[in-house]
Length: 378
Ligand SMILES: [Zn+2]
Image (cartoon, rainbow, N blue to C red):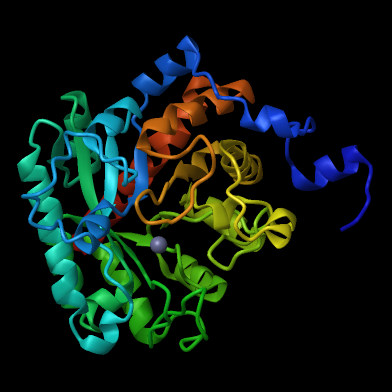
């Protein structure tokens, strides 16, 4: 800890120069009519929600014994609160644990999760619809439903077989996180020993095939060397579907500063994760590893990225129903409008807010589709 004058500290941290007092952080965020209007006219497109895994782990995959039209207080997500939160589009995670590498059923379990998402959409057709393209996202949103795409969380799911990428793409998967918590032979995880040292030759082939298909390359969970290697190889914008800022919270799951200019150059989007362990500032977590933090901490991450890279490279990747601890005032999918309110208070314009809430990831997706169309013509 250094003791710099406040102005120097602010300049270093690129944060607002009027730190909130503790009781200001606990004051309820009141969403103003102006923020409500901006939020309602935006397309809010969240990069990562683990509802499918939450349902599976609770033994609810048949959907016979749960009604998502009712409030589900034990979960972060249900249809009434999605409506209250103004969510318009979602990458539903079809996560299965990295340990399925050992049991040999990673793809099978992933396909079961894909089926579960399709069953959800079938069960609630007035609330959810599958979207194949960025245009379809916009079209579905205009009908008042939640445009649904899927994200595969971890390259272990393709079981070292390139053709499984198109199999998953054809079922509605529009991104794949290259690794989850364990390194693969072809890409390294941020939370495991390196084995590929970035990407292996096969790892490069995976990225090229994803580009050819129009499947977004997701660099959450991977090591910085793998982030940089993938950014060198990819011809389309990448996303970080659920990662936050390492300079604020020094966790290996977060994105280090030296990667930010590469993401900007690539046209990619970092979608900020709400998990307390990824957002509470390092010094506070050292004092209390169970600190929850508040919505203001999450907004600090968004603000930091917007100032470092430009607003067009920032998004929202909540990780709802995938994390055990959330900041105060961000307890469920009902709370997104509070983020819009706080960013409006920090001086972001309507247009900038629309970019952050979903315009940016839609742009990245559209560019990836264009790259794919070009590659498929060759
Ligand atoms: Zn994750």
